[in-house]
Length: 86
Image (tube, rainbow, N blue to C red):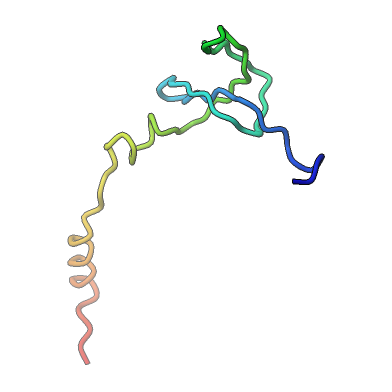
């Protein structure tokens, strides 16, 4: 890899704004906020990035996702516009 062209990739703590759940990962994002995170070597200070949605609050991952009634929509379409015949 060429030196000097890649962004700074460092550990960052992300916090879900809805649930408060936090997780440590690596990212190029920076933040003026910071948080203490317990590591095997002791507490470390990392940048804190607050996100609106994570796997803790997203409807698909929490199992609260609503499924659309596709059959009802098809029937309503046929009632409104009729079925096409040749």
